Image (tube, rainbow, N blue to C red; front, top):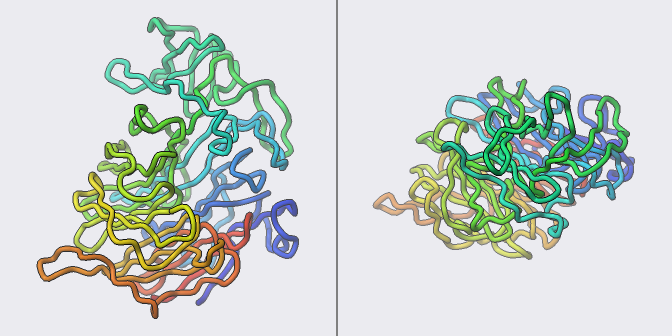
Length: 445
């Protein structure tokens, strides 16, 4: 064990005990934090996080990053890379007058780019108030392209083209233009509000962040999947881009279609596998062009598990997935032998975990799975296994080594994410408090 340090630290006593708030400073702090993601991009560790106004899974939530060029010994100052529009920004858990990003999942593309997927919600409480979510059609095809739809108060739909032009339901051009990813709607060149917000402007308790108001045309209230990209190892990032229309299956997915936070798997043949899920089950999406376009398998669920999951690649190219289940159960696993298209349930891992996200990475013939190991979100553990092949070279399963198990901490342990630091060291970024305290630690393997 070495180099244990706090990477993201809340500064609001509503969401973090004062003994921990003492660790906050200009390089690591905001009101609250949750949901870590961690990758090693060519020797640079990149840590991403939900940077939130509250300790809840709604309200004003941005995405922020820090980077390390010395194996996690020191880290850059915190940098916000995506901010949602908001009518009200406050530290009240009752404030829902904001769109929000949530649940970053990063992968390193074959060309070295970092590709991050995040879930994005219009002003709402997200999945935590399903009654607010809408089943309106969110996308349509026009001139061979998948285009988002926005609606007026009477339920009439409008088509947003790639160049920002807006067509009415008869496919006639309107005086509106729309930047869909940012939600900016203009009429005859004049800003008329944000399509992701509901009503009038409110207030902001945050310095330097302005609030805005809802537009007369609005997007359906549902979850969206946005993509950000860094071509310089996390130093700078693109604006978010909506990829929902590329991978959404409206017939089966419903209004909740979300990113499973943590890490993607980049395979030996160059495919990026990202984990998503719906209320009906898990979804696998993939990219063969460094994360510029995405596709999906057609099955929901893809195999086992009903919530967040994580994929890893075995030495001979098989993909193995570890899923979150409801209750304190053995960890469900699935396997794909055709690059993520078809998945089959396999024997569950012998260790148990509570209802909580878990993360996994594969290094050589070893696989490492991090999760709480108690009935509650406590006793963080990295389980260690070896991919086991028969004489014909077929993957039989994973041999788990109880003696190699790594104890991370005995107290609270919730969401986590791992990355290889070097050939003999793994790093883990994890929540060691219910909110707002994200720790990085390294272990020799």
